[in-house]
Length: 374
Image (cartoon, rainbow, N blue to C red; front, top):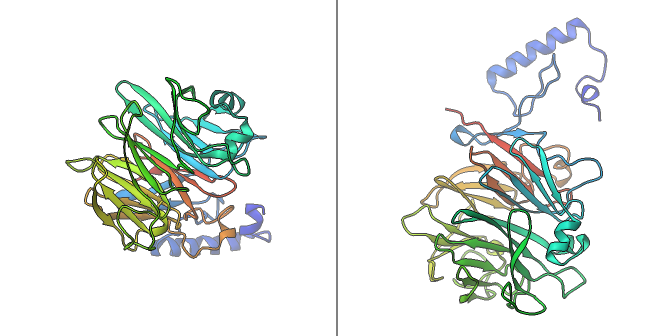
């Protein structure tokens, strides 16, 4: 629908404009709606979420793809040291999109990326899931997790490490044969990766066996815990999970800890680096957590329950962003810009700007500029 027609379905007289302006001024004195419009210019007010130091403004033009390309279900999003944003979704064009922080499309990976991982673009799309960025020494790497490839049950079930151009350096999981750059390991549906400061690697089999495995920096297996919980909810058995979808090594405290997003149980499970249980985090701010992202003094959690939560170092929520609970699903694609429906992944760039990717068929990747209010 044309914006002008929506706001002004009939031609306005000067008297109409004056009356509308007076009404708008009165509304402004009482507080404005996040995405109201200026009645004279028809220019919409910026869309904002959050409050105080955790206020963010939507950059509506960011993340657009050229004609002929489109996102699929939103999988993963990360930012590298130069503030380049990598977006993965279940699409064949592109399989991966790389943007500048300003929104310029820098690269798209499709057939070339499929060739590197040994799959067609269609197979990459069928198995795509999360992506993790890691700086190890002076070098930067990406870790990709693969789900089962739809009806092709022998596809996927791998985790592979690449450089920033997508060149595969090591693969673990469902490989044809072992070599110096590949290793067999039994996963049924891995979902996320995290790397500790000492180089240890943690991988969760969140859509499958519900195991959590720890490897050293060379992928030597050190320990595995987990399995499916027999109970459901925050009080389910510790060390057992019901969709252990995300993993992160939190370094906000004096001693690093491993955080696991136990999604279907509605909790975060916390472990030490040796995977010994430490504590459980739950509450009304924990619904269906997907994964984690750390920036400066806070931990950010995209929650499939229509919410993004920001935690301080003491695990206390300091912001709840874009709560879309109760919003009709059909409103999200072309409206509800200040709400989330199904946040699946997020990242934060060096300036504190927030990028959120949602698990919807059209991807819905959005940038929210950090615009704190005193």
